[in-house]
Image (cartoon, rainbow, N blue to C red):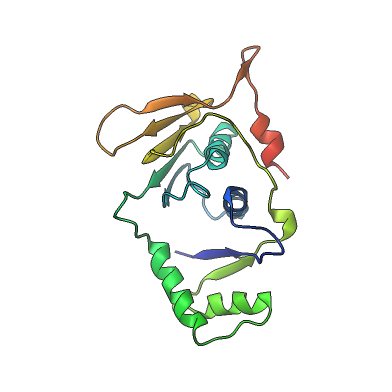
Length: 191
């Protein structure tokens, strides 16, 4: 398994949901997988992972047929450890013994922080980051533990608030206009 680190400095972009969505889109565009079902584990950061932008981006990827099913799962409160947390710890450890004077030095520090199967660092350019991918009002997903994007329900998402077998709530994401789905996400996400 290859680990990728998309990196940019503050002169390129901030660290919000548009930047994270842009990173994921660039990674998906690298054709790293030919799978039709995707499971993404995320922490509960509302500003980056649990947002309208991410929800609509995943829905867009299902609508265009890139994936048949996407599940974005969120770790439970109090169990906030993902594999990437130990990766970030390796990077922090390396930063204590290496100095970065220019942004490209940071790339080298990340690459050198893992000896076996080093991280593949990919710099993000300003043109890679969308200013505003999407915005939809009144979509409350802050308490979700699982969001499912399914090609058979292209205009909505299924949201669960627990991991038990309870039925998921269905949330409409795309407006219907003359019996066709308005695909505003297509023109907004594509660059």
